[in-house]
Structures are given as structure tokens and as C-alpha cells.
Image (tube, rainbow, N blue to C red):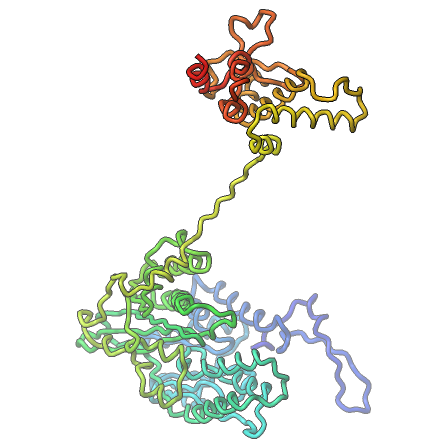
Length: 572
């Protein structure tokens, strides 16, 4: 396929090779004109060429163009139809479209005897070209079943990380039909990586035993035959059922098709599955169960696109009551880890019905733990749980009773609300709040001013102790600090000339500099008189400074808001 696609002339200079037919001849340089297998862009260019041809003929040959868009696996066409006539039409249109690009299809195979090309009958290999022909998925055209073959070459005496990785990489299961077997190999690989062994170092005895047991189980993989067609010819009812589960080692999901034919026969068949090993960072079991449900939602979205034209009814089953409880909540009320996954689950499965399933009826349970081929064939893996073969009245009851839910775990995953509170502190006021004597407060502030003046080498003091003027300045300093905290909005409004909208709006306020402090004062009828005015202050000043000897002074010079009446009652 790659050699049928021409490269742009300007890009061919990146595909130079050196060649000579014999060692005696000089080296020659050749330029490859077509897509070269092995380059990073080769698969994309080849598949993009198919997509271009499909777009080109979408109007003329719509059926064939859509088949090319959806049914090609690299250079293999995997498609089908409900009737032989439709199958022949797909073949004609696909062949005509690809011939326009000089891409000739050959070796047509089918499970219908009238469509098989007897000249080219052989097993259809779906395995990757990097794998050997014995390690892929085989299709039995006669029995219309998928089969596996596995015959690796290994040395049982010397098992290393390199040899294990080589064999595990050869396991090819694109549909996830034997995922419970492959998950065991993935778990062993994870343990090897955690041990940080060298590539050619022998593995520990425990891993060696587990690995040899897995190889012995894989040797009987050829006995597994899985029906390719998972529906019925005449469908009366079509449903999709998905299951998910998790353990401390792995989590995964599987999807089944449940059909009821026109004759009333119920058929349940595995469509696909997907699994992942648990992350090395330890997570709680409910979170791993949530990861399994999230994986199920993603896999369901891919499957429903293919089956959307049949309009199935979808049911998704989970055995974790906590996950089902989370799924009924708004994602914004949950923690980041849980909320993000619940939001995507709710978006991807908005048309689904989530229900609870007991452990013994959950086919995904074997997927999360892994098993051998023998146990897999004896389990409910391929045909789903027994209740799906019965009427929906016999299905597990979907109880929403929270008595079985660990509410402590639920509360741990509630979104925590954090609020930041920024407070500004006034160190001067905090200091004087600890002093019970108003005179001592004034002395402390006055001595602080004396200290700053001495440091600045200003005029020497005339008296050994603070004078009345210095004490008054200390009082003004305290009042100004209180005003900047409690009347900041009022002072800003007066300064900018804006109307006051606080509880001071009924007072005639103005700002005046007193002892170097811009004080908020109350005017009135005496505003134009030769009078210093009344200083406005919070009643908090009286709590810390108003002792008996200073009450009359405060009553005459300082107006405490909501505090004047208490002063009057005390003094008069």
C-alpha cells in the first residue's frame, strides 16, 4: 500500500538511500519517490490518502466512501452487510474508488459461500506487521468465529525483563476479547518496573512462578473460539449493557449486546472490553471503582457511534454504591479528582441508565483480577450474567438506600471551601490596648515621639518629662489611628468631596490638621467661630482611655459615636 502513494517532489530529498549491487561497485545515491515503510509519517500519509479518495467520491459513491472511512484497518478492509446484495454493492464501490488512486484490492474473504473468492482462500490475519504470523487474531470463515494462536519462543531457565516484555508485546487483542488473560501480563510488567531491574537480570522467584503459570495458560489459547456476529438477523429489541469493576491491582470494563429476536429468543454476546493496571500512586478502592466507571463511559461513547443507527437502549452497571451515589451528585460539589471524572461520565452517558449489580453477577469482576484460560471459559465472561437472559423484572433491584454507603468516604470527597481573610492590624493600638491607665498610654506615646525627635537631632527638650502639649499630641495620635480604622470611608468621602453614605451622613463633617494629624471633626453652628471644633471618634476610645479624670475632657472635645449617652449618664 505504501509504495502506491507518491511523495511530493520537494519531500523526496528526505528519502535518499545508498545502494550498490555488489561490493566491487561504487555506492550510488537513490531518491525514493513513494512512501517508505518505516518512516514516522508513513502510516498517516497512507491512511490520509484513503481518506482523500473517500472524500472525493462521497457524492457519487456514498456507500463505498463511508465504508472506506470507517472499515479500513491500515490496508485491510473489514466490513459487512445484512444481505449479500448490499455486500456486493460495497465491494463494487470500494473497488472503484480505490482504483482511481491505483490501489487494487485483492483476496476478498467472507463467511458467505457465494461471496468467497476461492482462488485466494486463506486465513485472514489481523495482526500487526511487526508481529509474527502466529501471534495474531484469526478468523474462521466457515464457523464465523475469532480464534487466537500463541506459540512464543522463550527460555524457561532464564526469564528476564527483556524476554517478558517481548512476549507481552506480541499479545494482540484489539477487541479486548481475552482481556482477563492479558491483564495478568500487564500486572507482572508493572511489578518488574517497580523493582527497577536491569533488562537482562533474572526476575525474582515470585514473578518467575507467576510468569510461567501465565505462559502455561496461554498455551491453551487456541481452544478459545468467539462468535464474530454478536447480534441476531431479525432484532425486535436491542440493548447495550456495560459493566465496570476495580481491584487494588487493576480496573476495567466490558460491553455486551443484548438482543431479542422476532421469535422471542434472547442473545447476549460480548462486544469489547478494556482494562488498565492501577496507578503506582496508591488510590482508595472507591476511587479505583470510579476510574473503572470513567473508562466504561469512554468505551461506551466509542461503541455507541457504531451502533447509533440501531437506536439501542443503554444500561451501565457498577457494583460500587459510592460511585453510583457520586454519579447522582453535581460535579461541582465533589473534590477535584472525583468531580472531574463524574462530570465527564455524566456528559458521555447522559442517555444511559446507571444501575447497581452484585459482585457475583458482574462479569467485569474477573477482568479486574485476571484469570487463566480455564477459568475464563467457565465464567460468565463471553455471554454475560445470567439475569440478562431473563426479563427485566428479574434484574437486580436498583436500590438508592444510603444505609449501605460509607458516608465517611463520601464526605471525604466533598469539595472543601476555603476562604482567605485579610486583616490589617494597628500595632500602636494593639500596644496601648494592653495598658489599663490612660495617663500611662499618653506617656508611652509621648515618650515615643521624644525618642524619634532625639534620633532626628531636633530641638532639645525643655522639661525632663512630657509636657501637657506633648500629652495632647499623643491623644490626637491615638484618636487619629482609631479614625483611620473605623471612619476610613467617611474620611475618604470628605477628602474627595463626595456625599457620605455611612451612618455619619447626618453630621456636618470636615477634615482639619491638628498636631500634624488630619482629623475628622464635627462642625455645625460653631463652624465659623474661633473654636477648634469637636473631634469625632469611636466609642472604642472611651473603653480604653475614658477613666474618671478624663471623662469631662472627652465629653467636651471628642464626640464618641453611639457613646455620648453613656458618658452623660455616668457624669451627670
